[in-house]
Amino acid sequence: MTAKLVVGYTTRLVDGASPPEFTCSDKRLKDEEKIQANIDRQSEAWDDEARNQPYTGTFDEVFIVDPTNERYQSWRYKGREPGSGKSPICASVSAWILANYSGAFSDDLITHKHPEVVFVGFGMRRFLKILGLECSLPREDRDRVPVSMWFGNSDHRDVEQAVKPSDFKFLDWPTVIDARRPVDDEEARQKYDEVTEGWNGPGDNPESDALVALEFCGQLGLLSDT
Image 1: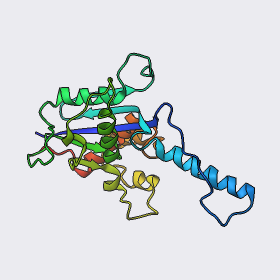
Image 2: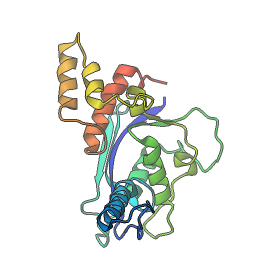
Image 3: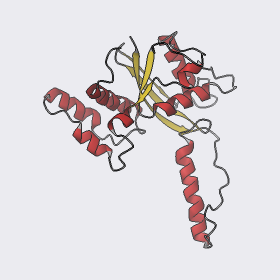
Image 4: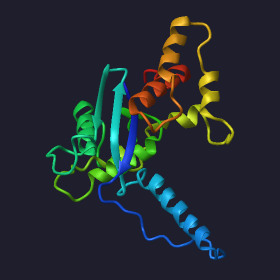
């Protein structure tokens, strides 16, 4: 049976990461205030993007639940700062996955076997890229993960693309949440309301992201036994 790992996570800038020296991207600008505003916008965009990419970004918190095997685990950056003596989140997350799903991944570049693990959640491709690349860095506190877990891995599903396809630019989360609220089962409706209350999209609270993803996956049949 394939294990479906429902993942929620947030990211942060790597300690010491700093933006490049930006210059004005619009050569037509002459006014100093407008030039500075242009540079400031680039810097703000870098801050937003840098934490969500390998090398300049890392995990701030990760929450994983395996509903089939009734196990879950969470990890936080707090207490893992440089010099703390504790492993970074990426190493602890990969160790947990490999300990609980041994044999699911290998260093083979091409595999055709039925997957033993599928990652499900919001932004799973990004999650796996950051995990794999950070664990591959040549540092003493990093443990490389099997290649098939993160490179060329098609065994992941993005819940956002399932319920809120990017094809439709005016589709927002309040619309999705309201439309998918159960109508016939009062208990299911109460549970849904509890899980989605205050949730405005992924990236703020990993546990909430995973629980909301579980709700959507249940409605869509994405967690069916295979």
